[in-house]
Length: 307
Image (cartoon, rainbow, N blue to C red; front, side, top):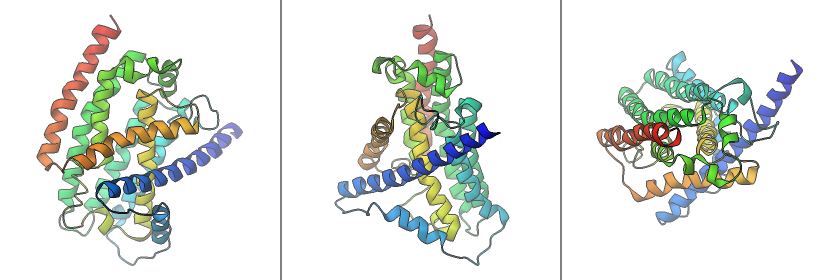
């Protein structure tokens, strides 16, 4: 019991650090996009100010229990995903509960938050909430297909579902990283990451160019604060997961920040260079090129890496 309490305390510290880091990265990315567009951008303290401001607001609006459980499920998915991912390889403090879960459990928690959010949005008072849900879930289904194929490929390659063991197999030099040993699966996963981040050209469910609707408008006060907190936490957690699976993990915080920021910049570079796809264009893209690459990654492992 004492051991698990200690792990819980370590995880609380990790949760705080990763959320703080996610908020800083979010502010940095917004400033980068602003510079590309000829603007100044937000101050680095703005995400923290927004969250504190919303948490101290009150509301008298009610749409039903499920509407307010949506943000709770969303942040529960982000916390659950982080809980079973080792953040720093070889560190007892920052390994979280990775010894108690596997890669499939992490993927389940990634789905949990998004599906819970869809249920919450479905009970909102907006007449077009069903359109937003259909957009979000359609794109999620589309980009999860190549991501799942890439995961299957590396599971076959390393013969384990443990994220810690996958990171351990990549130690000993950059030449052992999955990006070099199984570049086909890495390419499929990185294309899927473009949809996961929600930046252009795959910001279908946010649709910032359209009339402002959706979670930023429908939710308010502490519920919006939970969504803003989870956006930072979940975004940083996904970057850490990709770093562990494809880029050798990290043995220190400096290495983690450099690797995750470089991974994120791939999505940002694509986002500032391409306009937004239509819903059908985005879905067709993921079901075509990334899915084919994901299938090829499994064939590559079976025929080349495991002869």
